Image (tube, rainbow, N blue to C red):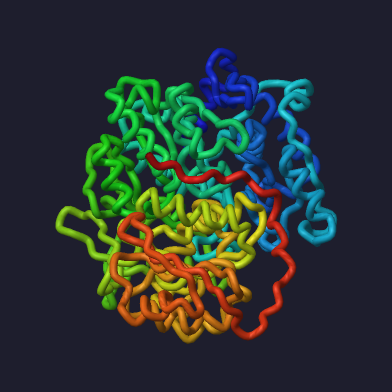
Length: 584
């Protein structure tokens, strides 16, 4: 936090320097200066100071959307040396309760107050927990003076965040670990890279809590927030208007950029100007792992995305592809404050000053002999670049997960308003992300991925959690025999597995289907027996689609055993409109 607090000491009272810029729905920009935000944070801190336990022991929940109030809340708790417990977007009432069991107060903006009202029938907050509204205008009106940065440099648990292994387990992030993480990232970045950091990933996620927000402040820069619910299809119109120097992208956002870049090239327009309103491409980065085929396509279009590998248990990034050191096909070189080794069984072990504090004995982030056991197999080359090792398969399922395949999956979930989606084996390549994004946009639905490999299952859970999609998708470490226990009735089934497993997977699922269930088999060559089964005209209506590497689309015609339809799944908080990934 040293770099952040150094800037705040110098610029907290700067009324001409923007800290947060919010694009309203009509396209106008609402700018809040360093003085606006920090004085509101001072007022909020004054409100809290008399209500909380002594510094170092207090924990405060943060239930805010992507708003200027979220930044006010973060800076208020930083000045008080109070532990922040942000609730990630899309969290359900049970998840929020598991993340806030010991907080003394909760800071809530308009969105947070709406969530608490929606959860009124569920015991989310501890007894005697105070709810403190965060309203920028009201706090600015009652501000009593300038923001105060404490002089001490003590270490403390500054944040409690969901562990990478799932949405409920928690880890404690130490202030000195965040400082080391930021110093390591900044050493690899061009000066002023985050001067205008456009935010398309929710502020409550790991990437922004320990990277984007503090990096923007450390660069004396500005966070630029999009209109509420901006769809990915409109992303490039917004980025061209705000002219970012850095842009955080999700995999669907990367797809949108790919489609816009293709169109610009076809029309003879310069890609940077068309997409970003700038002569050059901003620093495009991702806080979660992006499938390599997608990264390669971005690079081919002149849009290099700097992605890495990170875990909450290590306070964020372990390795990162940077402008100065980038290698395609890897998750980057280990950062300077991190130690990595490969264990006897090929597991990636992580150590160094970034290790978080385990808050529960069973937490995967527990420090064992100074090493974090990631559960991920990897290799480290002679230059220090980390290669995550995926299990070899006869056919790489879902490779590449093209924008067209992503649009197909997302569109089917949206159009069906699917209550139950089941996948088998292919979630490591991003298909589960698109299905979960569709469920989140609908505001209802259950997506269950069956992944036979434990390491891939853990990777997928971490990626979904980082993207804010974990509440909408369950990843099961499960094999073929478990498909017969999938939720029912299935509205949409995705088989993204080895060709010889498509028919056994279909057979295992048939008892969970209903007339009208849609089955997708991805890949160019499902086996003859599978095609014979779905094309015989008895139980399925089936046809191939020339999308991506090929999709066999089959519609179940006949009923299996009677399977009652359950009531729609409860919505885990208000639905955030999640757009259809854009392509060409």
